[in-house]
Image 1 (cartoon, rainbow, N blue to C red):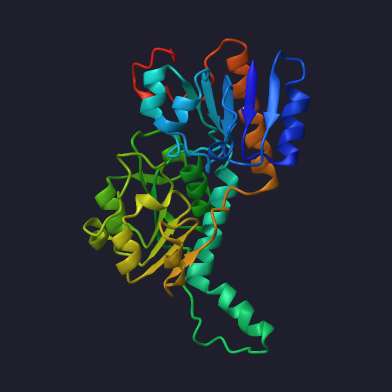
Image 2: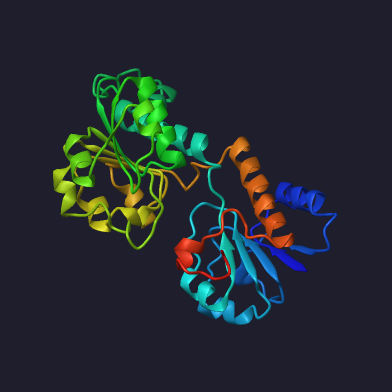
Length: 310
């Protein structure tokens, strides 16, 4: 079986070579995206977020049986087209909770305490700080949209800060009560929150979930988005009067706005999280090589009756 790894780093190459050496597979490694490579006779491809899988790409891969993305997000893959062709697709889940949750609070603390501005001033010998008055987290209402791995990590940290937590999610779990999460509608979370965190995947249902209409219900003035940019409608980025701190933007030119704090999609990027990505990706691959459905197969996202993912 021929496997192509794309957007691969040296440490990933060494990891997969070591752990797949006892399997009857032929491994090929590329630093480029799948869109930049002409070779296309793979049975399996392992990609990252910059490789775009659409109908035109799939037409070239006639032998393809399985696509693995080494990411939680999968909006770079046309899942419906994969479903039509019987191609299994899996992602990596649960790896980024601590990394992204902690980073999200880094964004919040920068937004409400203006730490970077103070550091930059002091480097220039300026000790003035009277115009940098901040706000606290303790006693505030924190809203969290999405209560999966990352959302729950954000909630755990909020509890440690002494904040009150309001959460919105598709399903309710027992752990919400243990963490003191008030399970609410989207509208109620917006009305109650001083600081709003977004921890949802990008799907047709969540695209533009925060938009120019419902943002008027938000009582606070700080939005933290370590998730996909398109969950927030572009007009909100352009017109919101408070602070938006995000790990990715729909247009990087928005980073020039004074009320937007942005980082280059790096919230997940820790030593520990990167190892978890490799390990979960390996587990998925081994499942497939052993004739099993990968444990994180995107069967429901492809289509609920995806026959290849029972």
